Image (cartoon, rainbow, N blue to C red):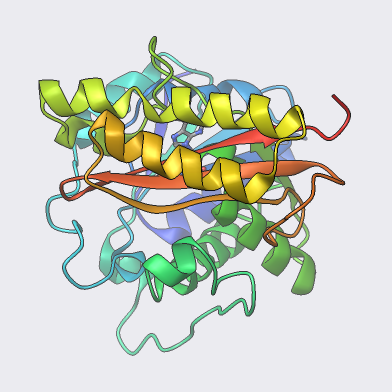
Length: 284
Ligand code: AMP
């Protein structure tokens, strides 16, 4: 089936309504475009749960802070649409900023607690922007199911929280991180990396994998976090925002491995912030 394009909420609603009236389940894949195989894997995953798949492409201004890369963020609508043509996506939703934030828009979705740590601390206001735009997309589309990558692990936790708190009638799925050959997590921002930076970037997952093995082997968590930070600086990263072992469910920092955990990390090369995370299992 050819990909349909909706640019307004009214067009999207009409298409979704007609799919539902045919008995289709509807899945939503929110993205900011510059699509790569990580995004496309979300479409593939959700296709087991929904026949009508909406991929939204919207670079959301409210989740970028001052001095961040909103203007420079890679945008290429025709490439993105071409990529989606070869997937199971059925609708591309491409709203304008005015469509998403109509004149006089003054409502913000703010999740407390969870959003003050890690990415929330490094990027004040970021999660309010994410929670607001994802709430809008969910209410505009009213899908049965929506999918988000574990690549943005804290974001997934924030989305699960407000969907639960606000009783939004949608199932939220998480999908595993898709990586390049050297293990670097695929990201639209990887295009900012020079060839030399790209080599350094490939070390982040190696350092984290090493930490996972050592923490699972019962080495002290704080020591391993410190060693990983030192190893990243040694590998050529210019700064490390955080390397932290947290509870996989609540994102609270952990000192003992007594439940499912996650190591989450952000390291910088110049202005580029690279995010990664991995599961840590207490049973080994
Ligand atoms: P973005 O366009 O960066 O906002 O990402 C849109 C969605 O794709 C989010 O749910 C991300 O977590 C997910 N995503 C981005 N990169 C990856 C990846 N490498 N593997 C899996 N999901 C990803």
